[in-house]
Every structure is written in C-alpha cells, then in structure tokens.
Image (cartoon, rainbow, N blue to C red; front, side, top):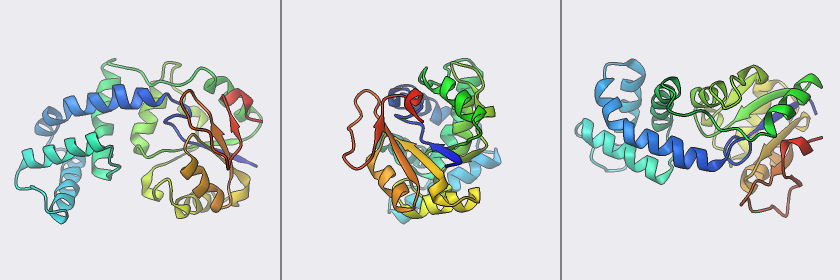
Length: 225
C-alpha cells in the first residue's frame, strides 16, 4: 500500500458541517450571488449546464429565476450535479474568506495525516464535492491550511462514488495498481465499489455510522495502520 485515498463527509469531517452549515449557506446566498455574477465565465457556464439539464427534464428554464429555482431544488435534494457543485464552491469561497465559517475536521485527522505522510504514504481526497470546494474546506480548516498534506484531489469528474469505474479511473490517474491504494469512507456502497476495483478498504465508524458487515472498520484515523 502506497497511497491513502479518503472521503470527506462522515470520514474526515462531520457530515453535519456539510448539511447544517455549508448547504444552508449556499441556499441562502445562491440567488443574490447568481444575480450579481452572471457575467462571470464560471457562473455563466454553470447556468448553461443547469439550463440544459432542466430542459432535458422538462422543467422550467425560461429565465434566470427558473434556473435559480432549479438549483435550489437540487440543493434540497442533495443532487450531485456538476453545475451546482461548481456554484456552491464559489459561494463557499466567499463564506470562508469572509470568516463566516471554517472547515470542520475531526481532531484525530491531522495527527494521523502527519504520521502517514512522514511514513511515506501519498494522500488524496475523493469527494462528491468539487475539487475547488475540497481545497477550500481543508485550506480554511479549524486547524489551518491542511492542503499541503494532499497530492491529489478527485471529484465526480472521474465518476460517481458508488461506481467501480470511478476507482479504476483514480488508480489510472495515480499510476498505481489498485491494490496499492487504501480507500477510507463511512459509506458501505462506496467501499464496495472501491473494493470491486481492487482497492483495499477501511470504514470510518463515526458517531451514527452504520457499520458494514463486508468491510473492516476503525473509529478514528489514529487507528489506521
């Protein structure tokens, strides 16, 4: 094993931070942010993607408010749409930079990252949130900027987290045999997909996590050997 790939929600970070801080912040600020930044190329591209999907799904997409309403409904449904993820990342950037909040990381994570990196392991992130959002969370964490620990970041551009092909794509991009990668997650179906791709797997059993009967589990990062 040469590389450790970790999920974020429920693994390095309390899932409540995402669902009770980040998502509500994005929902509250999205309408004003979109109206104020329609000329920004990244925002314009996200809106075009949103319009395309809404039209494909026979939903209203005639004006900017229709697009905003569609995006807000995706936030409520926790939909992993690339356009939404990109816009959320831009909105969260403003929140982090204004000091509105800091990224939550469990206290056992940082000492373990230091130990594992010193031991020579490569470290990377795979989350359904955009790479930009991942870097914001770890770059503005309660423990300071943690991005120096990670050499690679992956989001749903490589595929969805419950699909075997996503983990095959990650192994290819890392240039490593899947068997040399350990994947950490709290979600059994993600671990199933990674294992089917040939990766080694370990479940993080945070408070409220349903233990898997198919994968070994640890309560904290300190227990990762």
